[in-house]
Image (cartoon, rainbow, N blue to C red; front, side, top):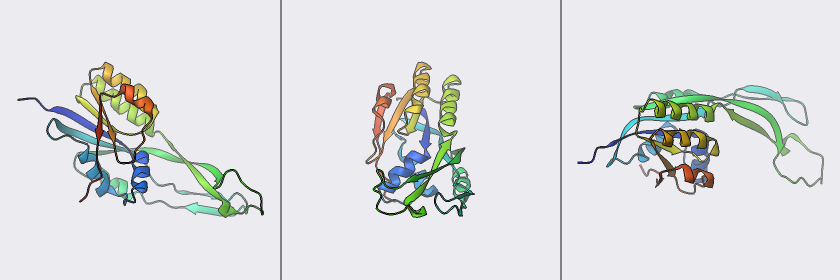
Length: 200
């Protein structure tokens, strides 16, 4: 009888959120849990842990680009706490930084004076890719798992993927419906696994 492989599932929350928005799905802890569990091949793998990487919603106030009036954002991060309390889940938090504003429509055709509503805020995740890389490196060096299953499309993971394979781990790249992961990821992947959206 073939021995099962210990597997850790690593989910890039920003990447998964974009895909669920395209699929018109409600993004919440229940959906994230179902997607994570669907990434596991029960016939050949046993779950070590699902690691979820994301930032809490932004909280802060900044001046709008035209009027100069302050606008504020208040985020509720309870959903991240709820997710971390689920079985076999661990949440790794980065930080969301405000990077200013950008025009909603580029190129801009000057038919009137600009107003605040012509702009949208720009936020940047910091520390998420680093945490993914550190966890993969730790699991590789300590041989905690046999397989790393990645839900991401980001090339920043490539050094960690290469490190895992050199250490003897297998790397599985999950492909969800309408996903378009960077082609540069494929040479550093042992298996590509198609996963459909959970139906219940």
